[in-house]
Image 1 (tube, helix red, strand yellow):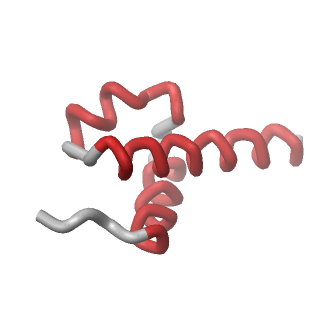
Image 2 (cartoon, rainbow, N blue to C red):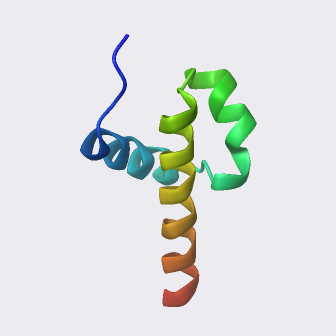
Length: 58
């Protein structure tokens, strides 16, 4: 299986965030979706960015 590129990971992270997943859910995301370590690192970084941006807007 090939590893996802940055654009695909950004798309996935946006959908995950919209469905309530957060960076702190790292282990559950790994179990649920079977991401590679690189994919998981990138997705969790993006989720954290989204969380921080959301907190700044409040």
